[in-house]
Length: 168
Picture 1 (cartoon, rainbow, N blue to C red):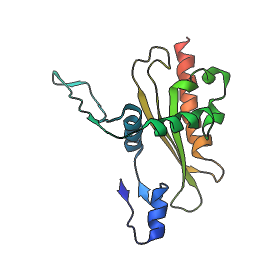
Picture 2: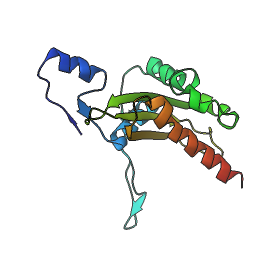
Picture 3: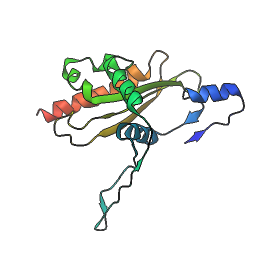
Picture 4: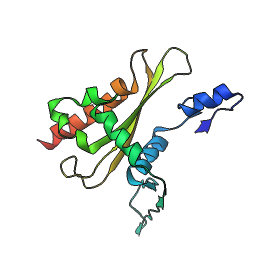
């Protein structure tokens, strides 16, 4: 990941709204996990190696997150991602899902990159005991496709498929 060089006040303004920087979906999932848990979260890719358990270290953020979290729950309930979660099958899970959508112009000047990051609270899905952070980036979307319509739809579809498989 990187932040593009900042050569003017206009570049700073663009960076403030999420432009002029590059991040991976894994990094953005870590952001979502940190906001959801209030801790810096390091992904654990393996639980054990050579008979030794992996060590998970977390560090408290020590910042107020209540307003950010409330806004992220609102994005799914009433905001830019609400449309894809209105299906009867998903409506009951909405109170346990928080997210933030984003849409950024692609470098080609024609397409967009659509983003949706967030988390699913423990117990939201059957058998789920941990907070699940996620990040979805859909590259090369068309002009009218946004994070709320395209990337959030990927998460909604995954949840529907999970529900379908767990009911078998």
